[in-house]
Amino acid sequence: MSLRRAVVAALLSFASVPAMAQEQSPELERFQGHWEVTDLVEDGKVIPREAIREWLPSGGRAEILENAIIFTSPHDRKKHVKVFSVDPTQYPKTIDVSTKERTDGVGIYRFDEDRLIICLADPDEEDRPDDFSAAEDTHRMLMVLKRTKAPSSGEDKSSEQSSKVATAPSTAAARLLTDDEVKRLLAGTWRHKDNLGALFITFRADGTYSTVREVQELRLFQKVFVQTPVSSGTWRVQRGVVAFSVNTSTDPLRVGKTFDFTIRSISERDFIFVDYLGVVGSAVRVR
Image (tube, rainbow, N blue to C red; front, side, top):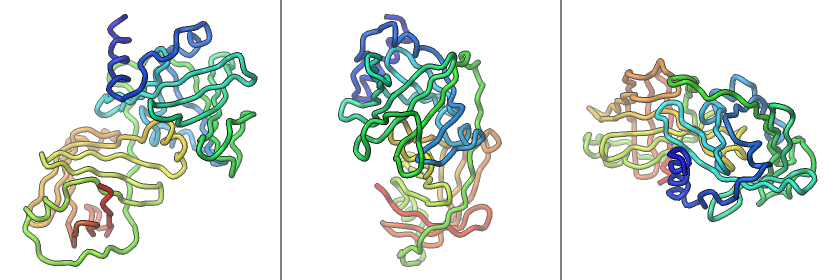
């Protein structure tokens, strides 16, 4: 087994999915290589090409190695892996995307010269698609991938979609807290809702943080594959102000900069803040 295949097998094992679950076959050979999502339709919503690069992990780029689909985060190079199986004896040819515990997507696929066209449905909501369409209320996703060359090092710096948070009013009772109390209450994962969907931020006790984007229009894509990592770095609290120092980001202009957020009120369940642009927002704890 080559070093790259050994790495993928280790990632699959760590992710609790069967490493190299499907033997290599002539049909599976056609999937091997680097691909880029060029067109995406989810439940009747056409995702603009510029949004694909901003919202999808790896800016829409993926590598298929054996039966593993690998998305590599452009800002911290972390790999996210899903496995798939195909049955080319069916018409249309079928594809399933799964983990060890469950099947996340059932669909059909076909090759069109250097393009791979996949139509998927959530097995909890719909049967396997019987044609390549994703009209409104079908709960399907239609994705077109084009074969590309392997990206060079340092390539693919996609932009982060900045968000101004606006959610339902918080029930947190405002009172003067010490910085240590604010730090203790912030530890955990919180959700900010905005017009794209939600931004999840995790504050860790060691002073590091990370954010992940969940986009409303990509509900099925994110369930089948992976949510999009956005940024990571360190955080600290001083006089009620949370300072984020950005170490990695899908937006290279944010790297190395510090952004301040003032805490207005906070409880175990939610908090209200004013961001560095002066916009009032709120967040709720998810864990």
